[in-house]
Length: 357
Image 1 (cartoon, rainbow, N blue to C red):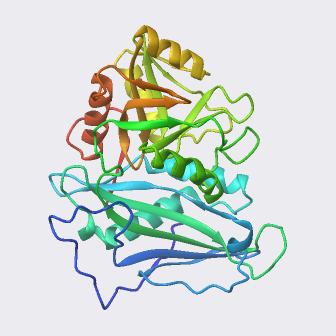
Image 2: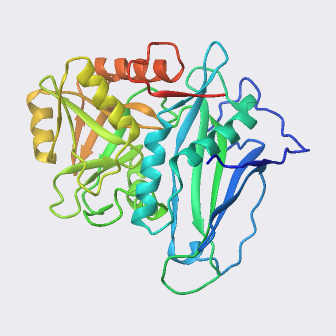
């Protein structure tokens, strides 16, 4: 069964961003949004694409009090021949439903979810920027809307998708970022909600992020919450290291977000014949590898930044420069390949892109 989506077109379209607009991440929103409601006993209903607008909620809406909400992030790209492509949307949809299960939100049928994304992207296709490094960011999210104070899952929800034309996530672009290894706060523990894409995970990271920013570092690298010595992930990215020719990334353990770009990078590295290990990696091993010169490259992966090379790491009072502090060979190749596939410029051997028609 396909969704029977109703469409209401805006009568007051906004001007499209100027060609030279830097499209600061997450600040500009398109003309339309997708909305669908849920009621217990009725399921998901009334799918619609409507003008982007304010939403009205009671002060007692449960999302404000207990944080029952989830979100996703993916992107649409315009190819040189004018097609619109999504990159691995099914992975985001699978992850969205994993998050839903973890925080007791009703799942959305995967085909309905994809149809909803395509419907709103198609409506606002003119907003997809084409300058190098730009894309249309897609933000699906669900919030609990019961008017009730008390801790239990809501019985009503609102599912929405909004769109935002974006430039580079980090002002540095593809220039290497500086990462702060956090030794005081923890983000998540196994059995918690670390692998769910829900706001609570991100608010838990703000104090450490502010501390890092004050010291001139753009992101925080989290250690595990139990032994406080194993590397987990960066605030908005998964993390990779190239040590002695082997690509190493922390294995998914229940407190790390299973990134879509992470999965793509692992697949590409294996496809190129590189040795890849998903395993525990301690901060001591990292410091040792940096000291003896076997740490060859460090990069982060995520939908927002795609590939973000890391030039410096700081742990306690030790500042490590990775090689010459510039972008590494594998980071550059991964960036060129992933963005090349996303833009339809190079062959997609994995069938990762989905066209919006």
